[in-house]
Amino acid sequence: MNNQLPVFKPFYRRNLPHLQPKGGTFFVTYRLNGSIPFNQLKTLKMKYEVELKSLKNDFPKKNYYLVKNLRVKFFQEYDNLLDKMLQGPTFLKIPEIANLVQENLQTFDEELYDLIAYCIMPNHVHLLIDTSIQFPKIWNGENLEQLKITPLMQIMKRIKGPTAVYANRFLNKSGKFWHRESYDRLIRDKKELNNTIAYILENPVKARLVKNWQDWPFSFYKYS
Image 1 (tube, one colour):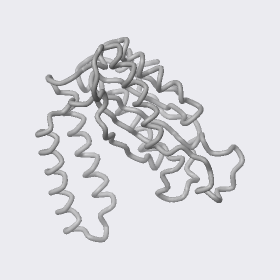
Image 2 (cartoon, rainbow, N blue to C red; image 1 turned 90 degrees about the vertical axis):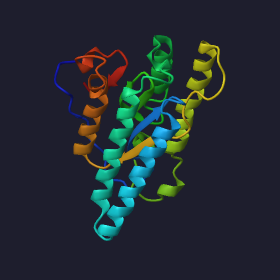
Image 3 (cartoon, rainbow, N blue to C red; image 1 turned 180 degrees about the vertical axis):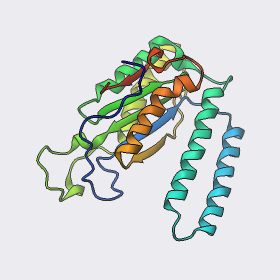
Image 4 (cartoon, rainbow, N blue to C red; image 1 turned 60 degrees about the vertical axis):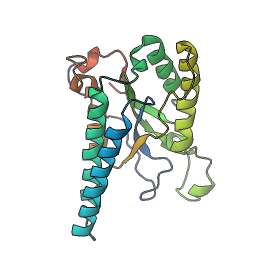
């Protein structure tokens, strides 16, 4: 890799039905259980709901992009909480556990998704996957509901389930390893895709863990 942030080069498939999540490209963030104190998370959610309600009241008809920008804004605040959290579990900074997560993500590459990029931080993971790889190579775009496409929710269960078991075994502990909920966003165009890749790779730099994104050992970008 060089010092320049990468640009996504492969053909970006966007021939899916509008707003159809099957076969979409997704940015997903999932975190360790207990990585954000409940009260801080509750305060952030309440603040978001207040601003969202105000936005919908002020712009009842043309609010799609405003709502999207608001959601991105609050995700960044959420991510900043994770980066700055001095308390709570940071099991993912243990190389053996980070390697478990990496191996699991790679397991489903070219089967359930095209693994574009990821970054494993001390208490959370950023992931970018294109699930359209599940579509038949020859497909006319019809009968989408009849295709056997594994949805994102099931993909995340297959990602989080085994790593939770193995990590707990390694740590000699029990209980929840991952927080139940994940943040996810459907990527809608190439600009958003490239911005997301840059966001993922730059996270360790933003968190002041390294000076250059290439120096973080638990980052990955397939098309560099």
